[in-house]
Image 1 (cartoon, rainbow, N blue to C red):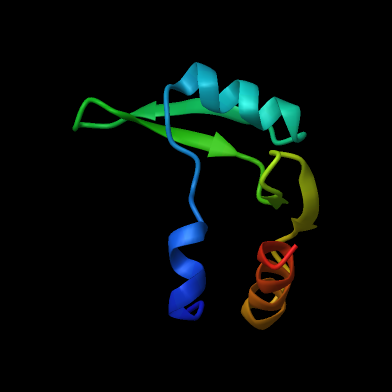
Image 2: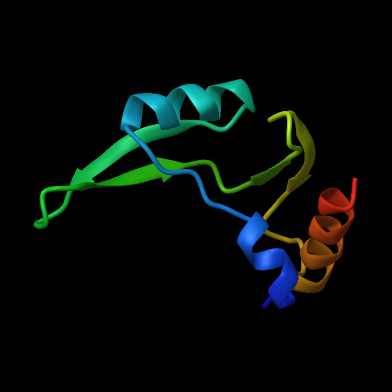
Length: 82
């Protein structure tokens, strides 16, 4: 878990599927609509890497499934301190 001061500045991407697909495309993340859920929503299928964006929305770092939580936390701290 990240230290409390960092949490409010870290957000996941939400919005319409079209907006998420377009944003994903801009940082080379493949996104597509998955199966319809009983709730009326849908699963979103995407590549398994995570891109850390700066405040201008530019990708600054890419994490793969092999990155440790400790390394990701360190990278996020560095990204937020810029």
